[in-house]
Image 1: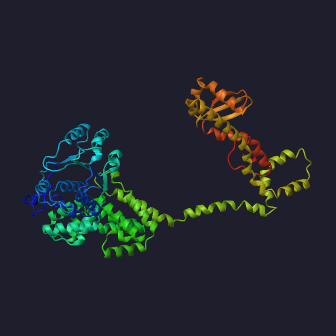
Image 2: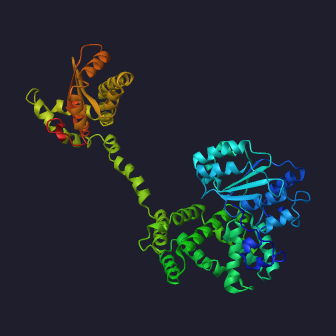
Image 3: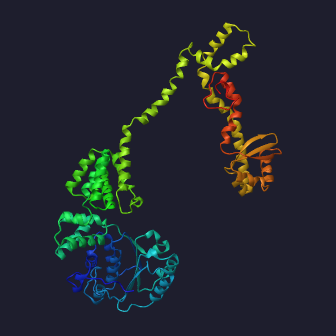
Length: 582
């Protein structure tokens, strides 16, 4: 496939006036390429010295000049009168490239020719000698779209091509290109074109075409292109087509969809100040004017990003005019950084795919505004601090009984009537021993914290069963992985007394699988080996909530002992085990 027509400037060929601007003003020399001076100098030196590589890989975002550099390289390599690596654009070879009839330049779209058969056809053609030039150049655009098999088929030819062949590979996604291919190429990474270089190129085109557009408007066009020269030239042509050769700044913004910039700032300020009503009114006005809500949301995010950069002292990276940059700095000075970050997060999460109207409505922006204003209002509410203060208020009654001796016996008299009633028939009913018992009980408020430490005495039993099951799981992992998987997180040891171990399974299907007999002998041997004696394993269904019920009987005597020391049970217990408070 021959390359697409490469048009020269208007003064070079007459049909060029009918072409779109980005093709009409495609660079015809390395000097006309803006924003990639280091790359163009390297290519120019390679051509001038005659030390051309057999393969080049150009990577970068769209519209940054990958295919343009590939075509310039092919033209300069075959130019009969190149000067310091630059093509002369006057010899027969250069004219054939400009007019799109170069027979030794093949441009192939790898996105649509990505099969193994296409690469095999290319391999058969590369052996043919050039027909009109010294070198034959193959430009494969979007090479990352080749299938894996196609990339493997290209690899051998790319590694050892004929001496007259130059491969130029272009891609927007370099990470998808096989490493074996990239390592055999000279790689050049094209960055997004800087705004200044883009405006210089647009200014040159306007001068040649007779357009009268001021530099701030051209900067707006360049910023809207986000580093893509092709997009910038297309936007310039769109503005001129709609408003003529002398558009105003407002007309440029309107053509680019930037007329909502002022209201985007209004919405951002209302959101950061927590003014929900003003923010909703702004969104409604933008929606009623028929503006693109997605574009408006981007402008809000862009505005908030500018505030954040200005707050951080990096306003110069915004590429704003001096007066606008000063205005942004002044506005950001009075705003807290956390509020700006919350605003960016809220509006950045606005997803218009979730809009039920499916027409780019205002609901996503309204939800983002509600979320942000709610965050702004939360710090003013004292509820979090009040919750933090409540624990000390609940603990204040507990030290008070320790400070007073006589009244402290009254609440204890409420908790101990049942034990005293049982002991009275045994001990003589005298007032003095009773007073002594009360007096001895006075220093007991401090040891009342023992219910917290008492359950810890039951920990060794639980730890022993957990350790036993862990050892069994480890042993099964080394022997039978299926059994190990069955025991992992699906059961627990309910009891291990004598020569019997009761294993409780959380789910019935695990219990049924074990009871089927497939693992019974293996489990008996594993537990016998872990405990050092003959063990018989029994199985029960033990749902996960059984653990809390099972822990109560084990700690029953400890609870009673703590209650005899004056402790009170807080959590509900079963009948017969809870003591006086049950």
